[in-house]
Image (tube, rainbow, N blue to C red; front, side, top):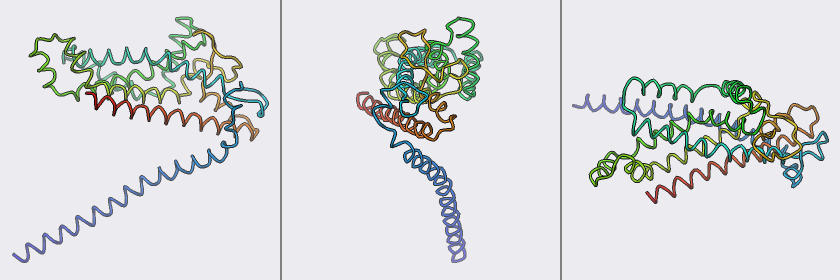
Length: 291
């Protein structure tokens, strides 16, 4: 009996040592990324804080650093998001509803699901090539704001579809059964019982997808978004630029003043991303309480 107790104590002590070592290993791995991120943020803030002035938001790009701003890039990014958001929401959520609530579980739908999951991991520059071929050349939208928004819509659609599907799957089956028991048809069940419960997860996925889109550069470079735009787009077929492209243009110049402007632009872009992520958290919490 004493031998068994001694053996158990030895095993427990050994497991605790292994658990402690793994805990240290995982903490060290996490701290490497956190420390690197903090170092980058500190370096960017030190370089760009002096350029966070009203002129950065009021002026257009210029060859002179003291006159340069990113007004056209900020407005172009916001316009692109305003075009993307309704299109992406309708197409992405509609596709998720069809796959989860209407389509049968057969080989065809499994093939579609596999393709959607695969497209979510495709490099963004591939979507740029697709947008260049389809929207710029085939549909002759030229290098316009609409072509850029549609290209970015294709980029974020797989992410929205997958996140919306996960949100729909998380709704308990008992809600659907209760709705059918009360005499509701399939669409009434989906629109009045399933969607309100899944809405927090759907909105979170949509906003996070928009956050990814606002920071993408490669697809827009492929379709020819300009680096120097000294005007605001008046309609969807005008030329445009966005914040990541403007930042890239400033970083490619040798003058240190433009590097400071790029750091200030990165701070503005990070602030927008943090606000969008914060909005996703607020919407999720709000609709979770309602549902």
